[in-house]
Image (cartoon, rainbow over all chains, first blue to last red):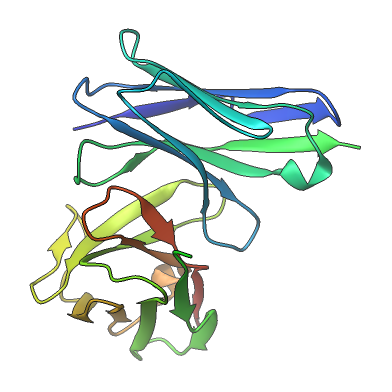
Length: 111
Length: 115
């Protein structure tokens, strides 16, 4: 089955700096890669996703890149703000099959 | 759009009782819903996949007789934890997938505490 590794497990950045979270996946047939933000005591919220036919996608301060050859994808958050502090999960899936989640990254933005 | 609700948001029950958690897609129809369990500071663990009108598919190691799942309509799935014990205490989260799409939207979660 699919295996998703995520790094780092914790990340502290100064407000205004950029944050990068990296994930690798094992199943070369995976074609859908969502990213979720989870605040304490809440369910995960989809913040951005990318499909295998695209190498990069951007939505305001958030961007995701995908390298299919290397089987890794990354989340980039620019101009970080305190409200960006949360746990971020990457995930991968093949078609309509179940989604496999990474282990999560706790991001702390220091004012 | 794509809002998923869960009820209740938290529940405390006595050991040996059963608890039902509802998951609803409020503004879309979902043929498939998923149930996850999450322990503190850990990732989401898929428990089962629920398809409308058919039996749920459980992940390896998940007791189907203990975690009963019903998906009676395109907007409602329920998870019943039967004969709950303290080790069942956890954060239970559902998600729903739009018909014909691969995107999952998550509910706010239900905190279950078994005394």
